[in-house]
Structure formats: C-alpha cells, structure tokens
Image (cartoon, rainbow, N blue to C red):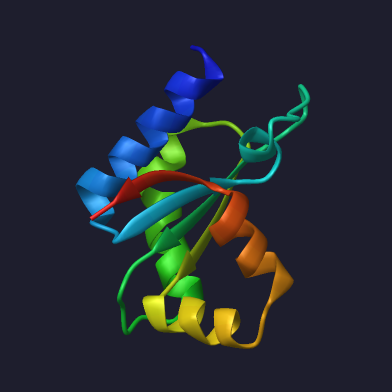
Length: 104
C-alpha cells in the first residue's frame, strides 16, 4: 500500500469512529522529507472531557489493526488555543505547516 493511501485510510478510520473536529498530518510526511524509518505523525483535535491518556488510547484502539509506526496526539480545541496563546512553537508549526487531512 502506498504511504499516502495508508495515511488517508488511517484518517478516514479515525473520522468514522472517533468523530474528531480536525486531523492534521505533521512531521516528516507533512514537511516533505520522510525516510524509510519515518513514522506517521497526526494531531487529532476533539472536544472531550477524557484525560489526555484516555483520548490517545481511544484513537490507538481504533487504528491498532492498521499497523505501522504511527504517533498520535489528541488535543482539545481549548488545549490548542491555550498553546497558541503562549506561542508554543511545536503547536504553531503543526498548525501553520502541517497538512489538514480533515476538518468538520
């Protein structure tokens, strides 16, 4: 399977089963410099009262059967806004340079 197809399939499965507000691809696949050892990095944004650990666990359970090296961050919209307000360079790079895979 082509890596772009795999990324789309992962995103589609998360959208169908987790119902996020956004999914953003970041890291080497978004920046255009992946290597054979690169993982797929995704920021999933969803309003939730669950703990950060539980949110990430929920998404990993959905995509577990898809295999491969996948790193998932799951933030609430409020977490994103707080981190943008303090000029968090990590979040700002993802927001400004990442590839939007899905937005509700």
